[in-house]
Image (cartoon, rainbow, N blue to C red; front, side):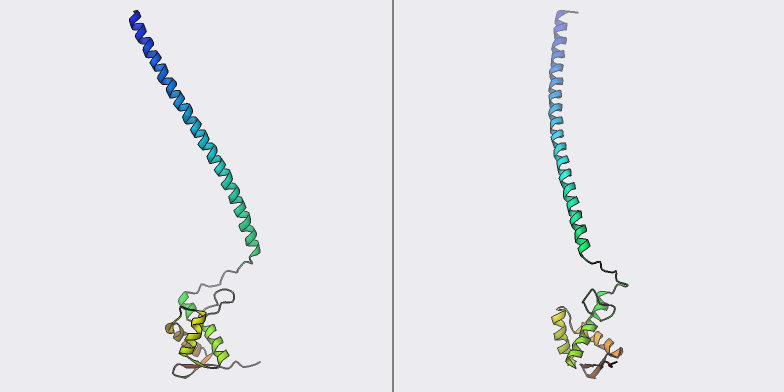
Length: 160
């Protein structure tokens, strides 16, 4: 080999070694960054796992404190509920029909505007269209009598 050609090969080898050393340094820095990200992700995973476990324990403890509600036998639409049909929705909640009947029994008799005024204290969004069908059904069931146009009286409950 000629000395000039050998020097040229040595320069190329030296340049290649420098490039590879630089690439190795970049790879080491990248590995360092990725290891730091991995450690951070593992710490977040540990933290979220701990919070999830504590949340589950709290939810389970709360569930044990709340009495379980039996599933309703049937689903009643909002319209049916407004019209006084179906079972009461939830503990202590009466249907519109039950509320109207209770009001009439307490009052003795009332006209539609009086019934509507009372019902708006219980159900603010209700209107005459929500009361009239209920009164008609109560009359058909024999629970209420229409004593004149727009005026109603509950049928007396026989005492046993």
